[in-house]
Length: 241
Ligand code: IMP
Ligand code: MG
Image 1 (tube, rainbow, N blue to C red):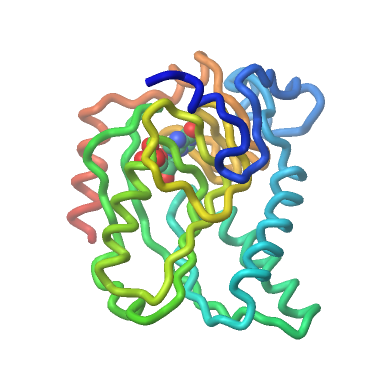
Image 2 (image 1 turned 120 degrees about the vertical axis):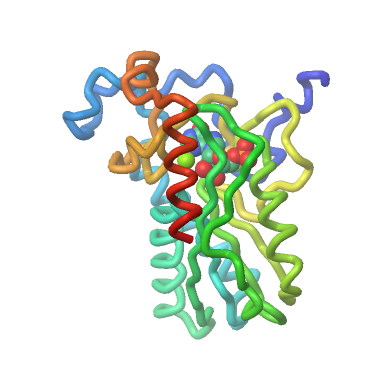
């Protein structure tokens, strides 16, 4: 595919972070000591994430104000964005005569091994979503990479016949072959690189980091897990579900 589409600016409606953005030096911010040496840079500082989320909340309020909505939070990566987004929507509801009555529901998806997307996507806790029939649904996801996860999730949710489905994605990656569907509300459009923090993980690490950061090679090696180990973990999750 020609790279022009990949480079096109603002396709998603989010703040565009260009491919040559080096991030901020780690020395300029504070972050947990246990991750020192594992990160390359602060890619998006926590405060900027919060400010952008506040604006997304306003856009959602403008579009969906006075509708009842069911927020479908995609775990685990989406929890922090979901908490902050719902919080900001609630604040707007408190301070205006338009409100959005919200219910929040959680589902868990898992598809990544180390920093690679894998074909087998597990949906945990989404078996019966029949209560979504006729409802307005807002899916809240932290990051859309190849778009495969979102495509699969949308198909799954559509089968329960909600009245409307909107998607809020904090980050969208510019990847060469990403699926046609973009979230309705996008925080940032970022280059195709692996990011962690603000609940986004690398093999379950880095969720306890406020800023969105780029992990370095040392960090990747330190927290790498082998495929067999992950398979064991996946089997354990499936047995419990
Ligand atoms: P997709 O199917 O490639 O769009 O990947 C979406 C899922 O992969 C997200 O729900 C995340 O859990 C995970 N993911 C994709 N890119 C990243 C990343 O850069 N950091 C952490 N997790 C990611
Ligand atoms: Mg993950």
